[in-house]
Amino acid sequence: MGNTDSNAYQKRLARLPAADQAQIERSFDSVIGNPSKKCVGLTAFQDSIGDSLPTSISQRIFHGIQSVNITGKSSLSNPEVTREQFVVFVIDLLRGTAEEKSAVILPMIRADNSEQVMGQQIQQFLEDLIGAAVHLLHKQNVLHGWSLENTSDCNAGIHTLATQLMSQLLKSNGAQSQDAPELSSISRAAIEDWLYKVPMISTFLRVVITLGFSVLQQSVEQQRDVSSLVPRCRRGKTPPFTSLLDLPAIMYLNSHLPSEMQHKWRLLFSTQVHGESFSQLCGHLVDQGPSLLVLRESGGFIFGGFASQNWEVKPQFQGDSRCFLFSVSPRLDVFTYTGYNDHYMYLNHSQQTMPNGLGMGGQHDYFGLWIDSNFGKGHSKAKPRCTTYNSPQLSATEEFSIDSMEVWGLGDLSEELQVKNKKSILDVDPEAQALLEMTGRTRQSEGLRDQDDDET
Image 1 (cartoon, rainbow, N blue to C red):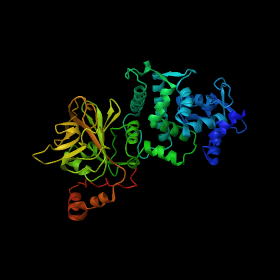
Image 2 (image 1 turned 120 degrees about the vertical axis):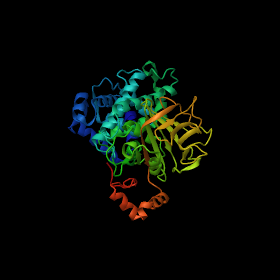
Image 3 (image 1 turned 90 degrees about the vertical axis):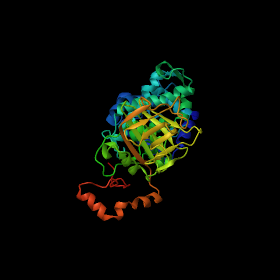
Image 4 (image 1 turned 60 degrees about the horizontal axis):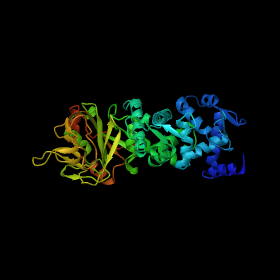
């Protein structure tokens, strides 16, 4: 190794404490299975990893490591990879610049040594990457209460999220047709810009590397990565049910929430559990802090909204500019505040002079998302876009019927709301509580308050 290459290698090492450097080197030693060996080929590399990583992503990782140039000679011609290449690869993905990341990601995307890649190759790379992250989080039991059983179809969600991330690359690359990504040729410069503007891709890469090779798993950065992707799921004492959201959609939506709300989702309401009732919805929604509303209508479209503030029943708009609307299926996307008006959130009930129901964005009778107080009906009117959030029509038809709905409280309740919730009429009236129990009914609020021992 020449002085220039040695200096470059040492500069990479300088980004990590000595203990972290040693941990990465030990990880390579465990891969090759023999510390006396200096390099390893693809077959031995994959055999050593086993089922820790899906074959598709382990092969891509090997090509990424193989592309690291330590000696100044063509590294792709060498069928084996060295410890030094592995160390630089890991450091570049964990701590590197967009330029350094793109240098090792490009070989992970394509099989040849060209400077450009096709959109179809990037789409498949994203699906393999997201699938590997879900696989690792599930295998290592860090889904924090979520599971492949209590969420919707993960495979469909992986494709949808990959398509969403891909669309952001095509948009920044000036592609004419986002419906045909395989027709677009993407330059390395565009990929560097994409990695800088869409940090979720780097998050997935870091999670796959740290969990897949058991390196730096206790670091603050790694813990932050996992919590930003997967919030803790709190379902209280509710019976088992399947969420309308799949894991990739949960990851994508959680990444758009304010950081202080990303660590925990608390189930507040589900039609599968609490029935189809607007009064039940209000009873479980009010005074529970920020929340995420998700519904599926009879046409099969899934969409919803993020309410950044506590819901109150009143005939005025509420909320702030952090609110947004979103679509999950057939397209995954988030639609944020435009600055046109302040019609963020609206919740009203039992009044004759104002609309009764729950709405977000737009205006009365023309909401971006509306759930009528006659529960089961709603609308999404946007011609051509919702004025508040610039969202399109979220449902299959403007007027829709609700098939299923759920609401998640986000983060921790403020002390003020905790005190307010403790003053439930049933808490201070034991006779009312006993009457419910005698008739075989339970308190609707039971089990919905935030408890740390109810993760399921």
